[in-house]
Length: 63
Image (cartoon, rainbow, N blue to C red; front, top):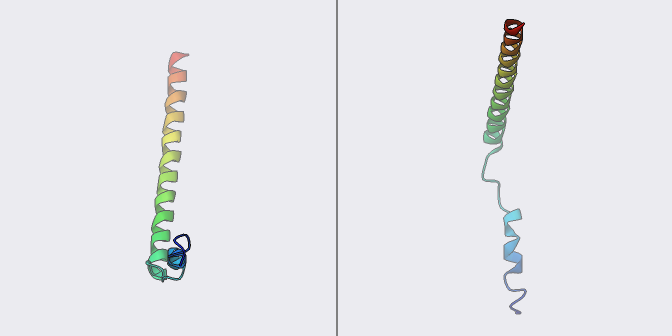
């Protein structure tokens, strides 16, 4: 067997392996990730509203 082709089939054996994470665990992780994304989005919207309110307050204070 040639050195170039030796073990060529073994390199692609990972495609035939079973997934390490079960489907239930994967769905649970997906839900957690979506909740975290929603929480971060709400936090950024809240921060933007606070910044806007602060800018309006300072604008009225200077006028």
